[in-house]
Length: 346
Image 1 (cartoon, rainbow, N blue to C red):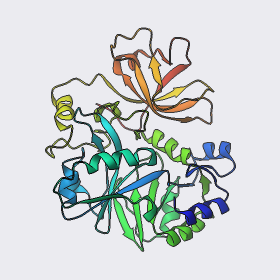
Image 2 (cartoon, rainbow, N blue to C red; image 1 turned 30 degrees about the vertical axis):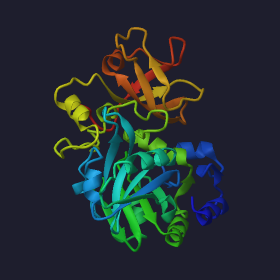
Image 3 (cartoon, helix red, strand yellow; image 1 turned 90 degrees about the vertical axis):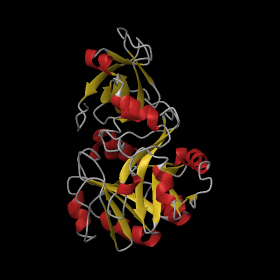
C-alpha cells in the first residue's frame, strides 16, 4: 500500500493491519450495510501484476484460461492461472490500462504467481513486475452506486466486465447483486474521488468486498485453496472466466477434458453455516451419507453473516449438496444450508 494512501485512510478512520483495512470503526454496521447500502472499500489487499512488451498478449494467451484477445481498454475479464494438471494456482481480473495488462489478485498470492509465471517468459519480449504501488484501487457498491458515480465521472461502463477510461480513472463494472464498480487511478485523483463518494457512501473494510463477491458467486483463490480446484469446480466457466475455443494454455488439456469428456461431480454452491466459530477458506465439509471418495466439499471463501453464522462459497460434491445433510468439519460440526446463487450452473 502506498504510504501516502495508508496515511490518508488512517486519517479517514481506517483500522489497518498488514496493509489490509479491517474496518472503519464500526464493523457490525459495515457488515449489515454492505447487503443493502452504498459502501466504498479500499482494495489495496488486492495487488497488481503488470505485463508489458510487444509479446505480452501472446505470452498471456499461452498461460491463462480466458481469451486474452478479448481484453481491451474497454473490456476486462475474469481468468485463472493453472498448473499442468489443470488446478488453479490463482484467479484474478485481467484488464488493460494504457499499454499495459494488469492481473488483479490477492496480495497473498502475488509473489508466488509472479515468480512462477515469470519462469515461462523464455525468449518472449515481455516484462512482468509487481505494480501494486503504482496505483490506488477502490470499490463502490450499492443500489445507487451507478447514480452516485455518474455524478462524478461522466462515462461509466454499462455491461458486466466492461471498462471505461475517464480523466485518469479506469472504471470496471463488476458482477454483483447490486451495482458494483472497481476504480483504479493515481493517488491524488483517488483521494479526491474517495472524499466525494464519502459524502453519501459508508466506508467499509476489505471483508465487505469479499462479502459482495460471495453474494455474487465470484470465487477468490487463496493460499489455502491454491491448487485445490479445476476452474469448473468454482464455476469459472459460468462467470466467463474460461474460454474453451482459445487454444493451448497451461493446464488446458485437463480443463478441456473435464468440459467435453468428463462429468463434473462437484461445483461451487453458496451456503450458510450456523456457527459463531470462525470459518475460513480451506475448511472441509462433511456428510455422513457421502459416497464421494474425494470428500464432501471445501470452503472457498467465507464471511460473517450479520443475521448470524457465516455465508460462504464452497465446492461441494453435487450429490451431497442435493441430499442436503451437510455439516462443517465432521459429524459434530454445525449445520450447513445450501442457498441459491445469482446464476444457474448447468
